[in-house]
Length: 247
Image 1: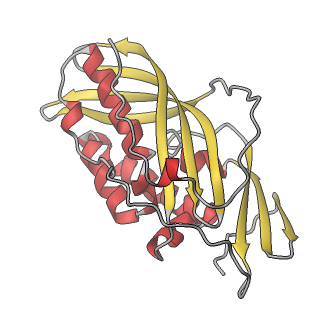
Image 2: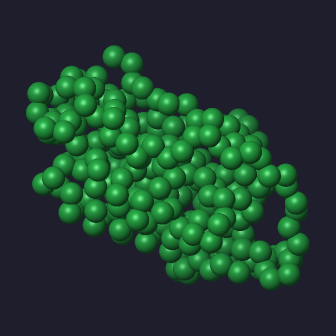
């Protein structure tokens, strides 16, 4: 049985099939909106993680085909020197920081190092290490991924705004929804997040200076949530859209 770190704001109860731990913290923001969690996470939500007790039966699910989309940790989208290019670069950065590599410490450090501005690289790498550790302590998905569990983390940008722009720097505000789930343990959970990405123009293209979490809207929903710990095929095997900001 995999353990999550306990904190006083957890409501722990034992069910017949396992141990249900309700986390009333910003944990879901930290993982689902990890690109924005480089700043201070302000939203609070409830996430339920079920750790199945030894010997407890779990429902069998068919294994879908492997997703053809791999984590995009390239910097190819950071080289257009224009206001729309800065917005596109910030969108790429949000996808990298809030993508699947957040569950893989070494890959995440490499991704952050690739998009960080030289003068800010050490600071951003320090934040990356803290974030990965916090995500694992809160939800255990980093350890689960290392042990072969299927963990889904992705960010879907909805809209963006160019707060400021010069030839040498830009600030881009992005509103997005983050998704996180672990097959068999953590139901797919959506978290809305907003952040301002400060980027600077370098010889290599746009690079990240800082990310600041800011308040943003959280839409209401009239739909009933799908309550299941099995990740749906729409998350596990469907191809992911590539997001490019419109001018």
